[in-house]
Image (cartoon, rainbow, N blue to C red; front, side):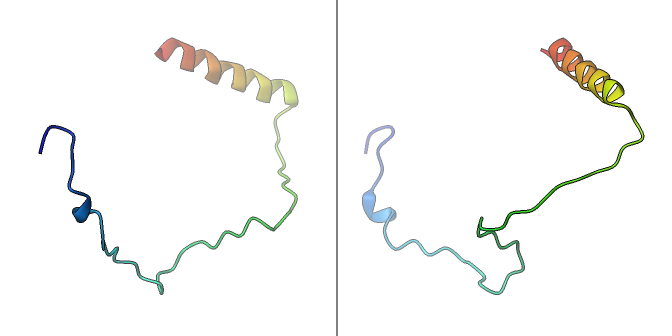
Length: 61
């Protein structure tokens, strides 16, 4: 076999070890809801923090 080639027979009948009893998060995408939060900071303060974070990201690049 050459570089980058593979034997398709190796791809057949691969068994993944899955645990159907494992705890996890069920997501069905059919739920809607509202999100709310309370802040002691003004909108201007929050926008200022956002701008500062953006500036910090620009400095890292």
